[in-house]
Image: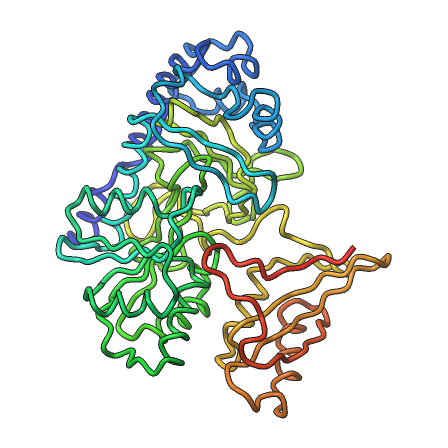
Length: 435
């Protein structure tokens, strides 16, 4: 009982969390209005003084910010838009979104904003159990999207050994991981699996790897039990640690140390809400809704009540099993509002299909086709087998039955030979639409 009480007391209670958020919100609004043209136009004559100890006043008075508003603003005020609180000379970094759901959005950061983002990653590393002697490998391209840039800076700030893995083949990355005795691998869930499979195909003994921690982001897979198990089997002795973030807002969440599959929101840096995406009203506990975020520290390029499009489950309790009272989203990111499709009256989320597929070690990759040319949409799936020969087994029938059981929908499956489907380094794009 004493140990449990100590765990709870280590973390701020809800009242403390909300006091901090309220103070930061008032400071944010005072700095942004009227200096930031985009926010000033949206907010009109908003008075920050109305933000008292009750955060509901902020949610009641401040409108949502939509991605299409940001895209439109950058078209009207190229190239960076007008969501800038300070003169352009104060901005030191530029990143842009992947453009997977809209036109790419450019995002600028001041040195102060970037420092806050790096601080957030330091919190994520602490929750993951990163040690001073850990050696990092970042298996991403170091392109203009935010990716793991801030994580790389955070690891360096903490004094860890870091290897950037941009512009390298998968085999070269594996060789570097072994040569530098890497203990922490940072990449997408899809690429962690691909690297493990590449190692197996190249005859590299996975038991020789010293990787003990695989920090994943960029896709929901890190919180899916089957995906986690698959990655951990390919990297023996390792543990998967999930995280999610967005270029527009920065690093947002981290895996609960006590409950893998649950993501905590960094409420010291964000004011989160969960709403019904159709009505805009607060989602009841236990129900699925859209995550709304207000950035509390990114004053140079702020977002107020930003509709992320990410679907999460509203928590039933304010206290997690780990003792933290930050917002805990069971199941992590469940999908996206714009990813959910309706097929013959059934709501289908990509994450559920991935969870089914990854329970089959015989399948190494897959692709889903949504055909909407007729009045009734049709869903079909291509599954790439891990080795030759599975095409003559009952695998296809078993997979179709599993999908029908999970989705309450018949999904035709075609088996493909090894190496026939695309591989992805960053966000996997496994869905194609035929219209």
